[in-house]
Image (tube, rainbow, N blue to C red; front, side, top):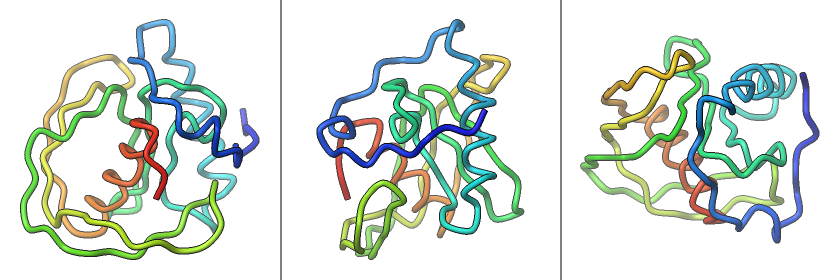
Length: 137
């Protein structure tokens, strides 16, 4: 179901709780909401739709949508400065990012995966994981 985008900073700064097997409904809500907003954004965290759970969705380099539950960056390389916008916030801000990251996460079947991402896809993932940590960019 398409959800409204949260813009209230006091809600966006709350650190997200781990996803459990009972939260897998977030897969559909994130997928529907990102597809609805695809002309304006390439990634989304669950707190952006009002759910403080560790779940993100993004569009990868191959234009596939990927949902990650409980993502954690376990390695990062090649720091650079980026300028980013956000569907939940006005304007563009500068932030530190890494060109290459390795992420541990769970799939919609709740199976653990580890995958390496680079370039723009890595940047999107880092932005969305910041949301899960309550970090506003």
